Length: 241
Image (cartoon, rainbow, N blue to C red; front, side, top):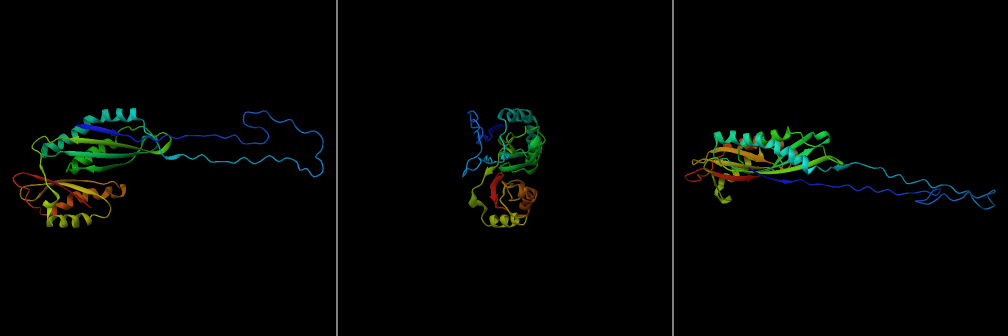
């Protein structure tokens, strides 16, 4: 398993200004004037200092060191997720990009499979669940921190043949109709098809938290589609909505 980290960090800068008539920045207080105020003069009135409220940024930074430590500890569990999938489907392979949004105290707000070509929803769910349970560090200087992780998994057996987009033919329209029945929003489904054009397994991905609840439906929906035969071995294709 090869993983790549891309952890966006955002720094915050704070500035302070010294405002006032009685005491200046770095200077001494002026001596008071003696005597009464003369005709035509008005007593000096101290200006009201401008108050600028300090607000917490919505986006916080995540410690690269702490995130790397969490991922190191999580590797064994991630490997188990793929091993279980490979016991049933040795052809499963591909890439998975995961985006986690972490709130205060290290609480995981959501875990998105933003890109996946695994083609196995069970394996994807297992990986996402395992990452969500990890003790992530709290974001610094903001309410929500973002962690992105990319994984590549090799097939334990013979990998499926990647089919070109034109291979779908009329089945592509039917597949998109079935995906539309699950709801709206951006998602992609990667499917494995046997030599008779029947669905073997499928996985799904989305970049929108609101679409997360549709991914199981999307992975199941293609079971009702008859695909062209990929030839003498399993085929693999990705369909977007």
